[in-house]
Image 1: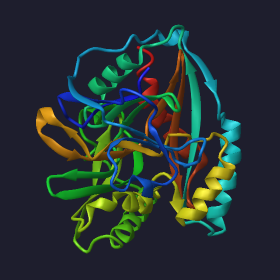
Image 2 (image 1 turned 90 degrees about the horizontal axis):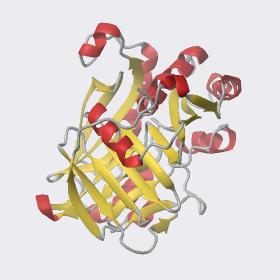
Image 3 (image 1 turned 60 degrees about the vertical axis):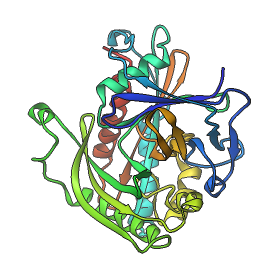
Image 4 (image 1 turned 90 degrees about the vertical axis):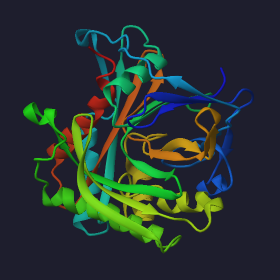
Length: 355
């Protein structure tokens, strides 16, 4: 099967399919290797020779109407859950991570976990993609296949880097609350945020400001504001900026990725700690994906770039689905509350599997 990606931008009424008609995607070992390149990018959290950045060459690009309909979801009574990071393992990880925060070695660190779900029969990946498009109009939805990575389905609200007209944009997204009851009828505008959530989002926003200052003196920050993603809400600040040199986007991506929203601060120290200590390897979860300098002639789009952080992910292997979620820890974080936050995030993908 040829490598391909199909994606739908937030609120769009069509999807775009990018296909490499022969050969395998380029394998890159640094974000800086994306300088001057084009294609659909699939980047992992930890870039290694075994798990490289994959760049799907845009040999064929076409628009696809968004089809209505649900996936062939199964009765939840038939659910077979295989927890690859059970609560006991999460407790160990939380204690380990939290100790670093209490000793003030880190200001923030993100703890992730993985859950495996099995269905009686496989669900067609494209059916899951269509279902996600219908249920999550606010999110960037993408389905990717390469021989190296397998199938990955993502529904994410977090922009890493995108271009609109002559301006570039990124966001600082952090803090999480679950909507319940009557709150589901709104956008979360009546909720009050805890000090912990506000601090977590501010850490991300400050980091992005420091990154942008290395590349441009022309940027603006707006926010934070409450935004909804599925049944969750987050705090979001928007950054718009110009780039005097857009031929070195890989350098900017190298500075931004991974952001404190999926890693922590100090960036390099928390990244190394996560890679060495987290029970569930993240693989392509909490990396980023999307089109980089891809042209779609039907809409006369020149060099479209929409790169999103790969949150709310599942890796599809037949009738087994590896679901990923994480949450940012601060010194005053509570283990049970953080576990429940990851449960709420896992539900974004899990709900596509069961009616």
